[in-house]
Length: 280
Image (tube, rainbow, N blue to C red; front, side, top):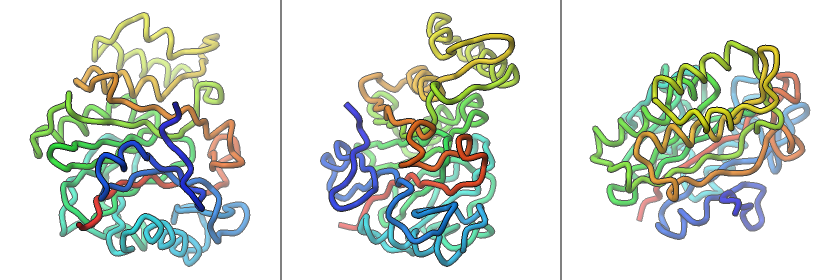
């Protein structure tokens, strides 16, 4: 069953199973619909770095915050450099990156917090959004996993940070892998293939599963399944397979609903993943 479900009277996709467990939790993923941006960013572009009109982007961001019941002042973003570094967000970092790229938390692709009234956000146009929820300690996290973040195991880094700083037990952690480009639309060259093979060797993952993440492998090229690679990293880090939800939605196939950097030749907007705990 698809875990990301369109909300009532909105184009946004929600994680309702998580939100039912804890009423103050909000988590989901935006689509390209329902905002004010003009072509080629029409209409709900959340990215400030794609040459869209800044006022339109901020209007879209404010609409998202309002829609999920949080203030725009709570909106917090990282720089996103396709790495694997994680930032712990406290009240001091709350609100960074909400109105400008220059103010974002530098050098990170992952954010984690146990504070209420902090809205963690990150941005996508094919890369893989990863969500983390520790219900016992009320800790939330987001990670942006492009192919570089994936092969440097940002999912494992997030789990380790949550464990070290908050006492999160991997077997109790719930994870979700959001809409992103699927193997059907994502062909890569030998550089990426070699890095995936290297990751498999480093983590000592099952060889039979490695074959399943490559499709149509030929002459130094292959289609790869980034979602499944991230799932295997999570399992190796101690997450129970039954605690990992995976979206079947492909941003490449559904670029009427999603922005796709690959399918739109780089000239497009960005969706947002978000997770936050509202004040009681």
